[in-house]
Length: 339
Image (tube, rainbow, N blue to C red; front, side):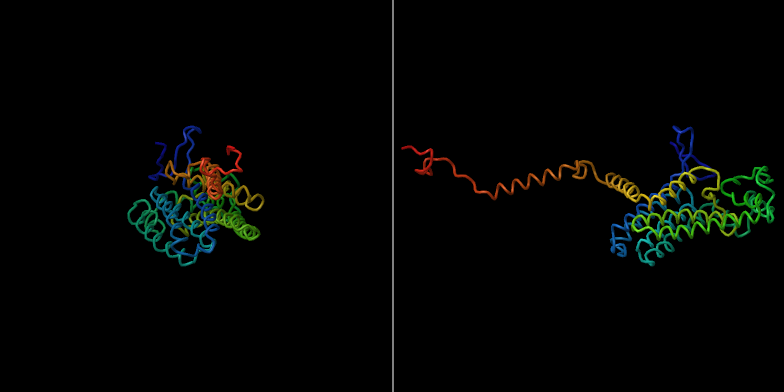
């Protein structure tokens, strides 16, 4: 009922109570699943290397979300989700073969099927190979090429005023190249490299294993999304609507990126908050999986009460049972004996 369609894709939900604001659930799913994988790897310990106990259950959850995002249809978002999910699994202790095998086998097969069967994705691949053209892609390439070394000036871009579609979101680096020139593009790339370097040092400085693994997955999501945007604008990858975090026009990506960076920074300063958030999410998922009326729905005090009752019963069974007060077993020294 709240689903909305844009350019043939069903990736957004309309939130009528927030003034017709749209929300993209796949962005939040990537962050939540990274936190879940980090928690799962910590709890499994050495069993994370076991294929049956550790790897297969996590892969079942990951590929469930992967195919849901792929069905929207969002090939780039599904691949980004899968890379963040499997990357966190690998750093968490999973064997490289258990991570690379599903990525190449199942992920590669799904990509080939989508490229073959979905028309607009096949057209994007043809644009990447040069056998088809698109107005947005051509104008974005012209914009980044017209900036020269120093650009035409901030806010003075001709292609901005010409209203090239999605120039402020999915192709914002082309706008930077036009208005700030090659120097501006190099500055953005330098900031991205500095972010990746300091993010790695930040993760290595965290002593708690779960917090370090969760921070790695969150920062990996941010870095990979930025890299995909740069590759799409510079034609090193097929056209894909992927905003640049903290640089593109605001939306779901801006909110989720801010949320992810905030959680990553809080992993070292306040790890208890991150653990509490993960525990709440894990307990909610477990309650959703348990059928109603089972022992899992009982209040927390019931198991303790049962243990106390069992202990009292065992103590009563161990104590000697009193003899019945009959005439046959009353002795002379008994106060009930008659003279």
